[in-house]
Image 1 (tube, one colour):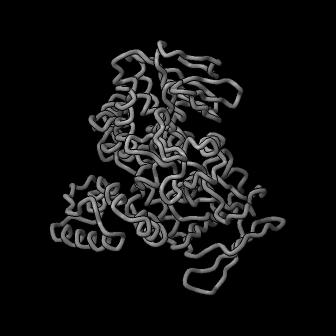
Image 2: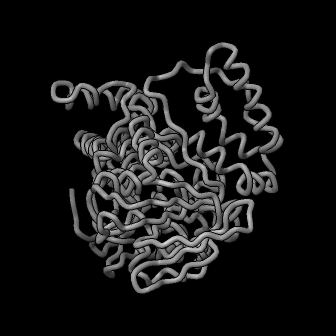
Image 3: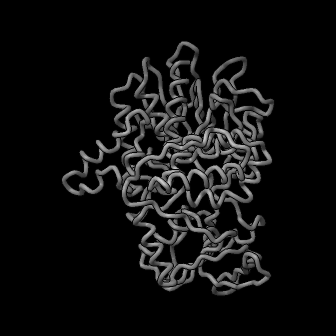
Length: 471
């Protein structure tokens, strides 16, 4: 079922229960699929998205063939209890035309994975006792029900929707301004959000480009420019000047980590990992398996650190962890290496000291890391690749601001995302868990840290859907 907008309605306690999911990217679509797949009684799942399609979200739609997943296919099933689910779908679709896409070790094009998420949602809806309603629109406010009544969603177009539960599957917010003063905001030469429409449009083939950040978002930008036959120089400026490391082309044997779910802090974790890497090397196992073996323990390790140690990690260790943990697909790594070898891509360690707009370019002043030296770069386009701005107090999203203003939500630990209880219910300003409002994925950053990738989100979606189905 598909609606352009919700009807203004009310729902009494005897009517069919309704779960509204705001956001139809991976987290929202998978939560909907889990609810539909496991429904033991009739109810309605309303999946709300500002614009179709429902399923791929920002991460997996409007991407180029060069944009690959950063995890092999065998680890990307939508359902944690069925690791072959994705592979079976790939075999049915590509076994004859492109058998290379149906293997466990393949790094899929993100667009293909987005289609898989979309199909997973559709399949779950086909045979469910519950009904799926797709709604195109933007939720801007949530009014709590009086005396135990169901909350009401207010939409941008003036319509409203009463629902028993609301799941905020809002994904990653856009980046914040890396300069903090909006200096570049009005310039047509500045792309504040690298995933916004037209962020890299209207560039001549030889135009110089500067990215603020050298993370995986920068990699995507460089790959996009290369795919479009851009030949101008690209300079990636970041505090540490680090690039994500590559995955291996083949699947590697698992390593059984001896690091448990608690450490005293980042330094203690680093020492333990070094010992683990040395032990693995003595058995012919490389560091990648060691990092992957710690992944299931990262949530409990993060939770074991006091606030001061978490802040220390964010200030000093985060970039080094992320280049090892969030790696490039092998083919993408080859392209980036070629760009570096030819000089078309340069990575500079330093901080941006100032930006000024000239008649034909932006001038960016960079202070080199560990030096008093400044360098001036000229760019036809500056692209903000600093990553999601996870302090929701600074968010420009109307719904997020409404939740905070009403006291229905409060910032998470370290000011990251939302605060929640162990059942993923939002904690209000008074510290009490909401009986109706839940979230998953990136908004849990302050609590879990590692909460943006498929393996973590699919577990959250499964557990949350079970809780809502049983209520």
